Image (cartoon, rainbow, N blue to C red; front, side, top):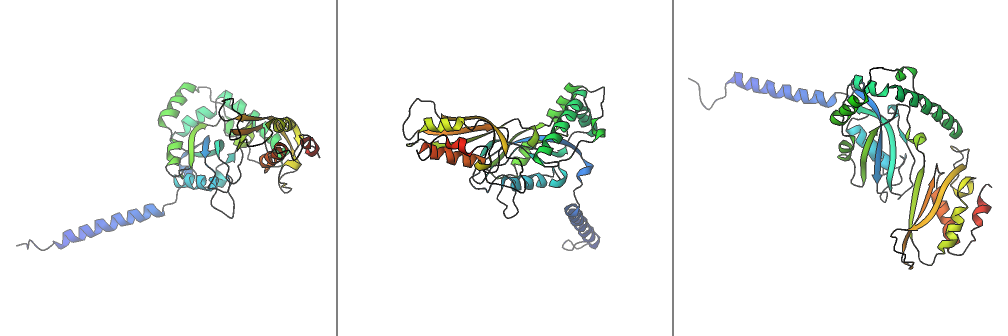
Length: 322
């Protein structure tokens, strides 16, 4: 007879073996290294917005973790969209300083894809994509020489033309089956950093830094007793191509060319109510192709000196091209 209160030794050993096997599988899974080369990869652009009040700036820094890029890279690694930053062909369209927020920051990089290699190859190898890739690479090389910065080049074998490419077929796969990069990353990012969307990069030679046509900064301030007319007059003198070395923090190690192009400088009210009270909220908007380190801050500082009557608008001309 079998004692109802006694466990059968054979059953007990089976349970023990089962628990041990499950535990071993969990440990093996935890220690298994992530091999991104086992997955298809694609080059994308991410549209990012953030409140910069709690951060030391956008670009990563060695002495602090409180940067936008640090948290972005952590999220990319945690979600296993990239294995490491060095192999991701990463590029940013620009950087912002401590406390500065952004609505239109764009970065480009190569990430893991849910699509097959064949589907991705058809899209990236269309005749139109190949022509754009070679044209963009030539442009990147020229701009890179001017800025004294090297960047990876597109290989010839990545520009193979496949004649049976159908754009409509790829778009359907792209929408329905691809990873929702924005949702995946936002689950791992702080509340004050958000990926607003993503788009397939035109080609693998695309870099956010060199592909950006213009950059726009807005500086918000209260009118108080500032002479807005004189500030606008001084701002117009900044437009065009000039040597802005007196309007930046000099970085002699990385920057040799201080010429930049400013397309537009304007001062406008946040609410167009035709009221010019001292409490009116305004913003200074500066649009240009590229900017030097702390250039916007220096421009704002000089325009405020003009607005307070401490300098005349011609101070801008005196500081430019010197």
